[in-house]
Length: 90
Image (tube, rainbow, N blue to C red; front, side):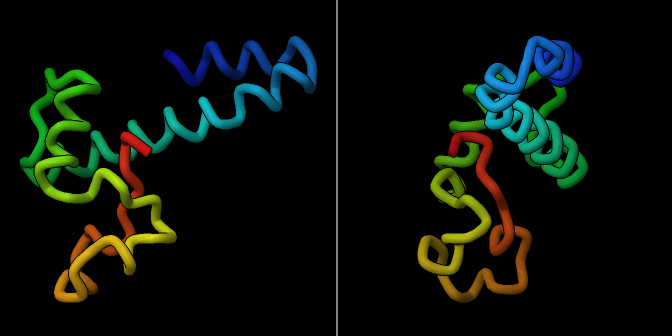
C-alpha cells in the first residue's frame, strides 16, 4: 500500500519524486526483511515496525546497511545472512 501511494506521488513532479526515493527504498527493505525473517521463523506476522527494529537491535544487525556489515559484524558471520543484511532501522 505504501509503495502504491508513493508511486502516485511521483506523478506530482520530479521534485516530489526525488523526495520520495528514500521512502520507496525503505518500504522495499522493510518488505524484503519481513518476508525473509518470517520465513526464517524470526519475526511474527503481526509484528509492528518497532518490534522488528527491537529484534534487529537484539541480534546486532540494526546498524548494517549492506555496505558496512563487514565492519559492524563478527567475521564468523561471513557466510550467514547477516553479512549482506540491510537493516529495517537504518
